[in-house]
Length: 343
Image 1 (tube, one colour):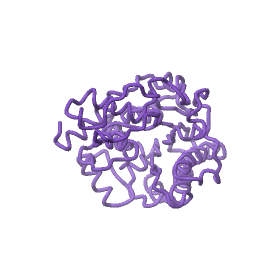
Image 2 (cartoon, one colour):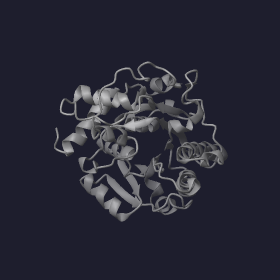
Image 3 (cartoon, one colour):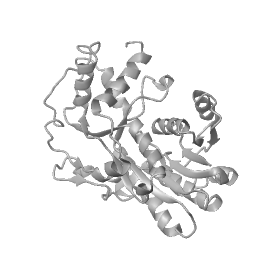
Image 4 (cartoon, rainbow, N blue to C red):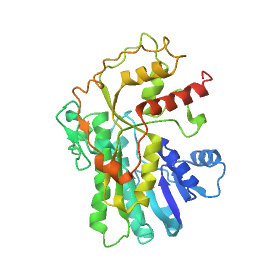
């Protein structure tokens, strides 16, 4: 039996596919074009346990029908990672909300139609955005847990690009839980949601290190390429988690019974842009004096003015220690510098 990974060319998904193959699973991935399919198959060395299917547009509610009609009998686990993550939005509904929600509804509908008894576990890549509220980010009295939900509605989520992303993850995850409630007698699957904060870490393949990286890793990339004159935000940018830990959590999410019906917040602590700079200056002598300077008294280290996260339940369920901030930043920066022949 196989593990199905939607959006397999994504930053997180590539690490998931790699970890699955290392554990000897057969993996079926999806991408939007033949060009992307061919590239990823080549990157994985034409591994006999890895195959790809084209799903052109997840906004199409029937996008996954063909692949599940043909291959649903092979699939036991589904990891749904495909969802837009960017802030380049001109139409919030069209660019973020509808693709995210229809992608989740569509893949679950295809499972129901063509593999209702074969698929046993469904893991949806949600986000901490589905847990938190934008207006409470700077409220130090707020402590988020796995039970919390973003309070945006469809209308308020169209206010701006950030709200649209928050809403897209919230509505897509809710769509998964609602589907299960409405179809629990028709399908065999059990659901787990993965809710990561900002995901940093190296790209799986060096060749994917380009001038501009994916949305979260670009935080680090931009500071590796900063100058002493760069003005760095001293306030918090959010919380962090390493992509390799996110991948591991996705796999444990379908392997462990304790994860069934759970939302898992993946976070190892807060960070600010200045904290990234400080780590780069500390651990990379070749950068010190060429990038933004160290400034120790950051709001993050002083633990001021930010909502907090208590994900003790998640950590207990998963049972492994997340990577530290320094390790995550260092490994991301090392890869960038190695590719640029500056290491």
